[in-house]
Length: 338
Image (cartoon, rainbow, N blue to C red):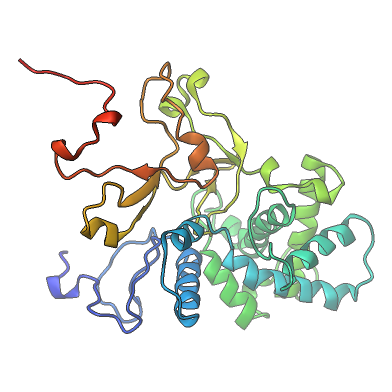
């Protein structure tokens, strides 16, 4: 079925004066009459972009190239801002602050991350442990909530769980939902019980994998950027791996597979200064990509942009309008056709 042109999702002069897209669902499916597909990203990245733009507008500030650089490197995880307070409240209700050992250390790490006075609050930075705990726990919480039903229906290995936004809605608005009830467990399980059950699984997994010192569970140890040459066919030409920032839910997206390898993220970051573009400035934009300027691994330019991309730095992008505008001092070779 074709969607009539007038029903193709669009917006003319939106009231907020901007639109945001981070691969999220773009229509209200309770009102929109046509099928657009099922494979949409979680809404958290789009929510964060909206937050950044609205905060800038509310402060009465114009948007600069430097602002956009900060936006593109942003690793604030909106999902963490929702779930971490709920998890800590559940822990306080259950334990009343009387925890010891590795459970206490884990909760202390999350309490520190949850503080509004912390400049690292809810940010998925590579050099701290809270992101490791949160990301692993969120997966465990999803599993603890939905796995028993999926196993019962024989679809555990084949069907995806509901999106995290669904779990968020249940956690906030339906604490007693039947989804939290485990038939293999005695008693009536709630969202709070399931969150703490998942936390126990997380601690067991991470301590087994990374040791018992929670402060050493850095995100960089389990969230590793893997940029491979020809999909790993020639490993000697791969770019160096490194523990990276971000998550599947951050503006600076970094999606990892089951091995902890990040293979999905921004293949290019670009910012255009339209005032410079209008004035025909030779350098109206900045951009960076993880590869170099030459696809030949033997070339000195094979990885010359990699470190810039890795560190959120941007070289200027040359944009001459015609060949005569090209700076002659930047020409390194010429090709003549006869």
